[in-house]
Length: 252
Image 1: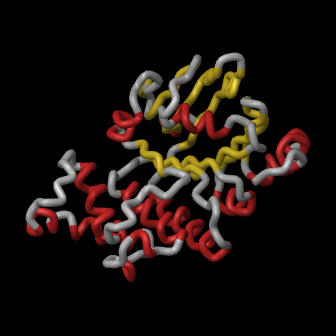
Image 2 (image 1 turned 30 degrees about the vertical axis):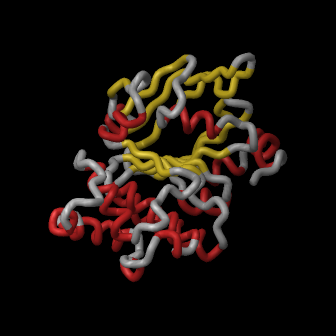
């Protein structure tokens, strides 16, 4: 890979909590336009690493660059403006607002507007066309007027992705997107992730190995806070170190 092929890069990334080293000297390159997964057994450090990359934690050592720009000391909100946005493991939508209203709020945020719910309907309606496009992109066109709290769990996650896409990210980071889902929803969200990856880069933490196998171009395996192996699924699944540390240790 050339430097131009890499959208997100980390070098020597480390995090210490008191006497515990949760992440140690992690090097990572995420290729532009790819789906990149981080996996590992419980306690491997993948969530901490993910929080470091998305700037919800500050590293104890190391550097992070986005499109060649050093973002190590930047805040998460500033990084979002640069085009890297995180979607959370726990669905983060307004349950009493409709699908359309949720996406409209995200559009207001992107454009720097205040969340003025008392504005005239005419002013708010200016967001509708784009909101409807985002809703269609995630397959929720039939649920535009349904309140978010009434959606199935899988559709809530799709709505959350729609609100994230409203921020027009170049890179989308997904925190266990399949957590707690029935198989039908897993298949639906997997198809959605593949669809939205057409013109975006995706980095995700995910426990579901079948999802990782089917979706990911590159997989980084962490164990005890360090990179154990990296490659496509066929490569890492045959690595004896991965079998011993990950599959042998069990996973969620």
